[in-house]
Length: 130
Image (tube, rainbow, N blue to C red; front, side, top):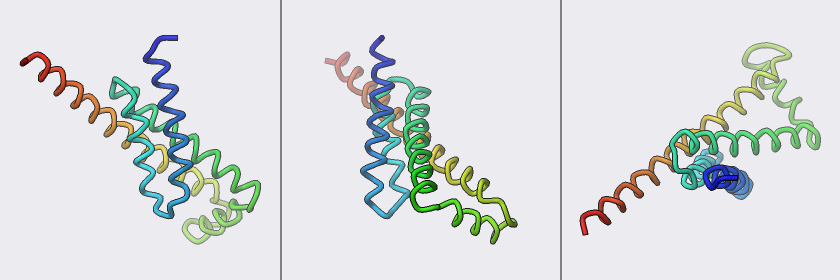
């Protein structure tokens, strides 16, 4: 296994564990931090975005499935979907929530990866100047 693939898998695990830690904070928008941390560990923008999206999306999927099994959260989603669209559209709310998590993770991964690319480029130019 090459080092880039290893960093990619490690960044996904870091993103999942960061998402889990941020679950304790009631501000869900901070989930972008998990994507940023996942993106920082990757050398290309494409892998950073993908790592952030996979990490946050996978964690939210697991968390929502646990919610469906343990506290019957699908009933609440179905009622909310019934208020917005009509009866039986809880699955659509589920997909929308999951897509929001994936998009926040991808955005964070892109930010983190681009930030590290800028830092690496800056350190390389400083090294070449001396």
